[in-house]
Amino acid sequence: MANKLDQVKQILNSPTPILVTASNGFSISEGVNIFQNNADFQKILGDLVPKYHFNSILSAISYPYNNLLDAWQVWARLINYFIGNYQISPQMKYLKQLLKDKDYLIATSNGEYHFNLAGFNDESILATEGDWGTLQCFGEHDNRRLIRSLPIAQKIVDAENKDQLNSDLLPKCEICGNVLLPHLPFNSQYINPVQSQNTFSKFLNSAISMHKPLTVLELGVGQNHPNLRKPIFDMMRSATQVNYIIINRDHIVVPNSIEKQTTELAGNIEDILCELTLPNTNKS
Ligand SMILES: [Zn+2]
Image (tube, rainbow, N blue to C red; front, top):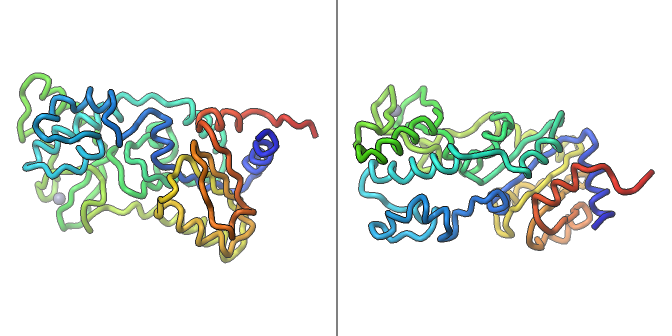
């Protein structure tokens, strides 16, 4: 492990651009687990379980609510809790240190907006499955934009706490009057993050067509995560100069064709990122 760590440190210390991919494992390491009926779920939504019979944040997010007020009651609580209460975690601090002064992009399927809240540039974050940190109108018209969700969520939660929840509180589009919803790919009116998508493509294309160096740093991405892994594997088939670093609690199987370019550091994400920010153990 020490040798592997030193190798990875060397790779990360070079001026090579870094493409970070992060998924559920990273969220879980930060204490956000949308899959479990855990203490957070009970604290945020426990009183609504008898009404909806959901058993995790994920099932609450995907529940087919009868009306937008019911949906917003849940969204407001989730946004208020996970975005309003967020404090930058140690693993985020280590990651910031590793990416400092680097050309980087963070592609993440995590919706809770924590990379943005931790201070990474919005343009350097590609939320591949949308985010709850911003809202959008899903009406069919031009000039739609993303607005921050937290102030609205806080207002709705405050009203609910005073027993004053009502539809007038719901955020409306200033152009068409539709109720705004979290920036998630509900349908084709989803606002694509064009700038960060372009950066993602630029990183992959320059590695493939110009054989430019690139480091992929994968943080807590599950074994079967096509959005975040397939484009990387496809790129690496013709870009043999790319280094692929996997940090995961569990062992991740990669295709034989890219094994040589891959270094896997299995264990606790926070601990490993911490180690990587420390000086090399080998004196050279
Ligand atoms: Zn609209």
